[in-house]
Image (cartoon, rainbow, N blue to C red; front, side, top):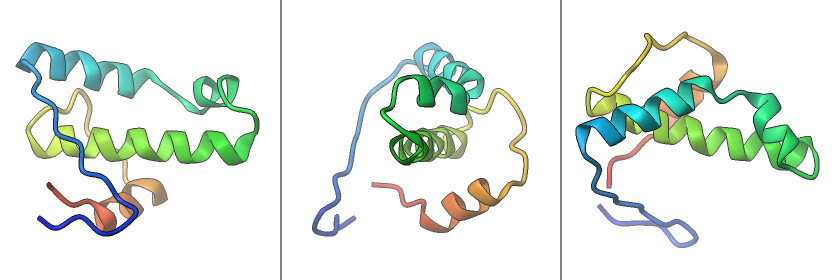
Length: 84
């Protein structure tokens, strides 16, 4: 896959247990967690969006601790997801 200018492609090797642990963490992390670590909502929303992308990538690899709920955010990231 070619990465566009201004983009990076992350690749990390995880054991299956590590992947499940990360997926569980992402499942339990909500906007309040991001907001408490951000300077404002404008910084918190993109942080949450990036974790959604990671969660989607885990799902593609069969790591899904819950069935995804069809939300606007999920539909948006389905459209922009690419595998590198």
